[in-house]
Amino acid sequence: MALTPSNSFPKGTLAPDFSLLDTVSDRSISLDEVKGEKGTVIMFICNHCPFVIHVNDELVKLANEYQSKGIGFVAISSNDVINYPQDGPEKMKIHAKEVGYSFPYLYDETQEVAKAYDAACTPDLYVFDQNLTSIYHGQLDDSRPGNGIPVTGESIRNVLEAISSELPYTGPEKPSIGCNIKWK
Image 1 (cartoon, rainbow, N blue to C red):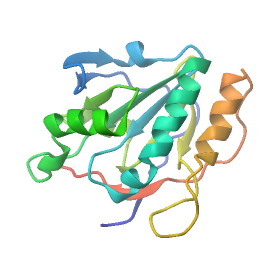
Image 2 (cartoon, rainbow, N blue to C red):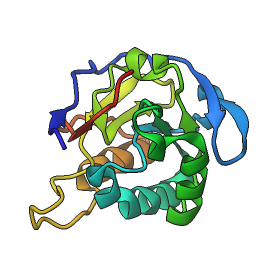
Image 3 (cartoon, one colour):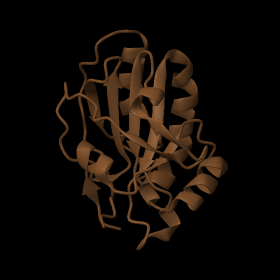
């Protein structure tokens, strides 16, 4: 597993639009459909990455807590499924149900959406305000597999607390780190 940090994604950048297959509902879902009234979290994840597996429960917990506060959530997998079949749409559907995702889990077959966001790793997390303007791109928290730090979601939670309270987020960004996206 190669440790890959997230790339820079400047604050103030408008969220690139998309419409992708939701592996759970088997229908196409657009950015506009997942957009929250107060903000939106876009997560590039996959089924097999140990960094994502490490934080899955916290991703579910955050979504369950903040969706009711006007924050939309969506997960996208952009991995090459020829070389990584465990990340294919059929297995994504099973995984989403087993883990309890309360948000769409979209398949980026062409990898164009990952490229538009300059996503580099899994998990790679983006938070946008009510106008789909970037306000945070970075880690969930300081926990990593094997480092002994508990998973709390603190970094993202601070952002979500601010925007769900309709306050500006002015705190720090720390890059995410995880497995590299498996490019074709």
